[in-house]
Image (cartoon, rainbow, N blue to C red; front, side, top):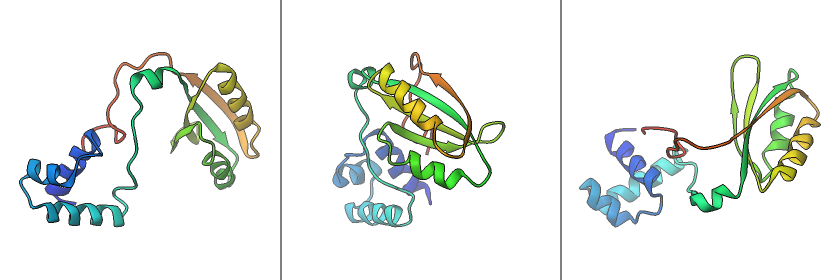
Length: 148
């Protein structure tokens, strides 16, 4: 990945719907160059997909939580297989320390979140969990979490 690839990604983190012509104009390169770079970034897995960011009004209707999970040895593949299809699961991260996974959730209300936490806690292989309810967002950056 070179400087042009990073510049393309930086533009797309801000607005993934930018037309190729606009990207090319902003980066002062040919449209075909941007298209070829995007195809290469997609096929190599650097760009895993394009998504939407909910407006604050839509996000405010959801209750968010981070869940720390301790998993029995060799149970992680099964736990991941059960977590991935759940639409409330926004992100799963492996972590070091006492906990094995950090799972970010978004549910339409406290009752739904409570039921989801009970469901996850009952998965085979889960040893322990701790839930952290998000109260207020003080800073949000693009999905990448920072500079590209």
